[in-house]
Image (cartoon, rainbow, N blue to C red; front, side, top):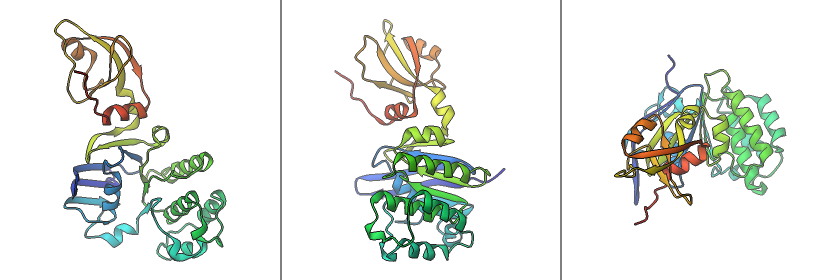
Length: 295
C-alpha cells in the first residue's frame, strides 16, 4: 500500500486569540484533497506549516515521504506550493522568474510551461509588477505545476481567475493526478468546484478537523430533514445533527445519516417528515455555523 502523500499528526500552533490543533490530517496519494473551512479556521496556517513557515509548537508533518522539519530540502524538491500571496516582483519579468525557478527542478516540464503560458495568456517579456492580480495567480500556479512535483499544495488557487481559466486549471489538475501517484492538496472557498473535482474533503473549524472523508460519501450521508417533535421529544444536541433556521411549520436540520439513522431519531422523539439531498456547500455551512436557539 502506498504511503500517504501528506501525513500530519498532533500538529499544534498557537497565536494570540487562535489555536490550531491538535490536528491529524491524512492526504491519500493520487487524490485531489479539498481542505475547506471558514475564514480564520486554520487552513492557510496548516499549509504554511507544511513548508516550515512559522514553525509548529508540536506535532509532525510528512510530505512525499519526508519529514518537513528534518528533511526539508528533500521534501521541497518533491512538493511545491502556490498562493495568491506569493510575490514574484523581485524577478522583474515573467521570463526571469521562470528561468530562476526552473534551475531548481530537474523535473521541470518545459512543454507544459509553454502550454500554460499560452493558456493563461502570459508572456515572458511582461513585467510582473504590471500584472493583474489574476495574472499573478496564474504565474504562481504555473511555477508550482511545471516542476511536476509529487505533491502540489494550492492555497486559494482560483482567486482572481475567470471561469475559463478556472475550468482549465481543474482539467490540468485531473491530468496531473491521472497516474494515481501525484497528489493535490487544495484549500478553496469554491466549494462547487471541489465537489466536482476533489476525491476527499476535510473540514476545518476553529482550528480543528471536524469532518474528513471521500467527497461522494460525505455528500451522500448528509441529508436535510424536516421534522416535528412528539410529546416529550427534544431537539438533539449531538455531533452530526445541525439545526438550522426555518420559516416552515416544521423544524429543519442537516443530519449525518450514518451517525444518526432515522430509527435513532425516532427513538429521541423526532417525527421525520422528509429528507432532501444537499450540495457540499450547504453541508459545509451547517457544520461550521453555530445557530443560537430562540428562547
